[in-house]
Image (tube, rainbow, N blue to C red; front, side, top):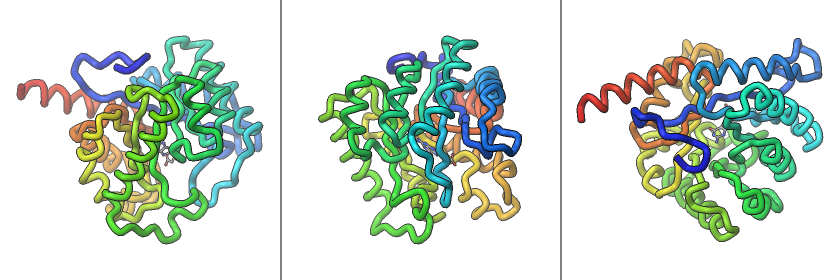
Length: 278
Ligand SMILES: Nc1nc2[nH]c(SCC(=O)O)nc2c(=O)[nH]1
């Protein structure tokens, strides 16, 4: 595929494994990040079949404490370096809104800047163009801390599509090559259940823009809104797989998930069935 990614022979999309490097994810409840635990989890996700590791050092959960760029870099850089020391072939994306964090991560060998803020930060577009890295431009309404308070749209599909079109145009005008741009509707980022469902139902529309389509619904809250037994993130595997398979059928080329082994298996079976039917 574009740049580092080699297409799967069965045509299935790439799986992006989520590696959150935030205090509540790996430390023993303390303040410090356990780099070795994060490294080992990333290596395990690669073993499970992840094509890409999405490494993020700042939680975007509503109410999460903002992190300054030094602290964010201190979290993610040692983990990128530790993983790539063991797996130089590892393809890494950096999940950050900060140009300096992205620049340091790309400098440490990351391939993609995954920006939930769609490069709207000051200097972000020019930084991404200078880095010549792949980028993911994701739609978010408002800010992480308050985006779920009262999301509202005239027509969520039209508005998100128009936003992504504008950001892709801005990225190309800044000098980022079209084949290095992925778009993402941002499930759960300033959306109600109805908004999320409308976006997922219209996913083919986003795939038709001619850019890569990146999709992330894994373990998200909307699954609990549909199945109230899915109270905790770990109880949402079925819904996550359903959304991943739907996105694959709709043309997503990268699917961002926590449960890599299960998703890879589901996508392999889906591709085998589709290929048998040809
Ligand atoms: N591109 C992209 N990046 C992301 N980073 C997160 S963090 C929240 C969570 O994993 O629940 N979600 C996404 C997503 O959906 N798309």
